[in-house]
Length: 123
Image (tube, rainbow, N blue to C red):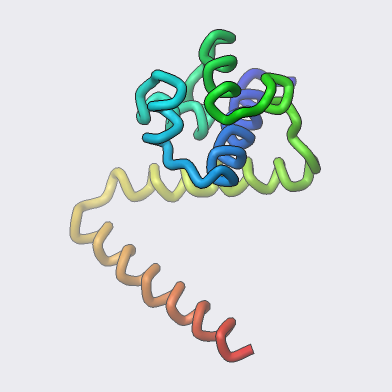
């Protein structure tokens, strides 16, 4: 298994367990005696995690370390990774644009999502 894929899988698993417990990144960081920015980087698969920190996070989430490697359905995991990759592509495109362009895209997304949500409410 390629290193980046494993980082993304473990990060996504940590995020899933954290949200299931109703914890914010800040709360998890406090429990694991870490920084919330570090937890965010781990969850996004952007940070290689030490075994000691992995154990601290598992304790903070009240699970065993091996639970952090229980990825469930591969299709679900692939979907999470694909979504993360697409978000990163959009993010990189926006970073090179002006503030006005980013604000325009944000308003367009708001309108688009409001329209989608309205369609779902009608069904």
